[in-house]
Image 1 (spheres, rainbow, N blue to C red):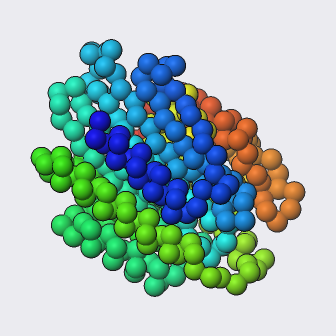
Image 2: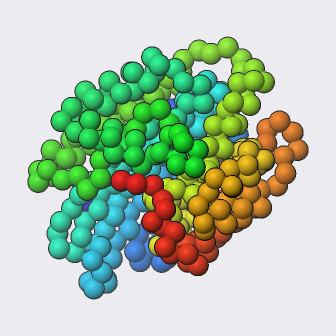
Length: 315
């Protein structure tokens, strides 16, 4: 499959661009491999990254012709640098093919700094506008809707690009666009990552912790992609939860509960309960065990309250 070959190549390009030191490969299988699976490269708590995950997945249902979905292939990456002034990055591209033969792409990229740098924001936007000028304004508007956090009255990230159900009718041209798009994001963001920076101050680290808590909050209470991945199956929970930063501010998260609509206030209360109290200024650690517990918790919440999905991020 051309889409799978492309996202695999882009995953390795990204890994090479950031440097593979500290990353470990993890394989997962869907239904023992009968319906596909994936590979992710992940690292946490290094001198370069707070947490990073480069995920490729491909699920297919060739043996279940009654399903409307034939296959779904995706590259989903999130990188939280260790240095507070280096911005986090979320990048996602996926190709979904229905049994009818219809296929469409999703393209997403958003820059997530704890310390906003107007020049970096402008460079990131300019790179995306250059590779996708016809769709840039619509994608930015859709991204702004999707990454808005009503309870906090703010966005996750400073600039957003989101194309949903994208198809031009020319698959080869779409492949070329996806390759240019991802390549532009990789080149631009790795430039930010390599920018020399003075040693971080305690104040900068505190601000990073607060922003990572915002990111964590958005992913667990609003992000439709994360919820969908968790509700479909439980065979890649660590991969689906790979976007969560390694440390968050438990008290800050708890302070947002009164702002939440029901039943999402219950979800946040349970999430906070799954975190250990902070022992020092780093906050509460989000270990693999915590991520697995959070995945189970989110799955249980939406199984009990399926109507709450409608309270998640808009499109």
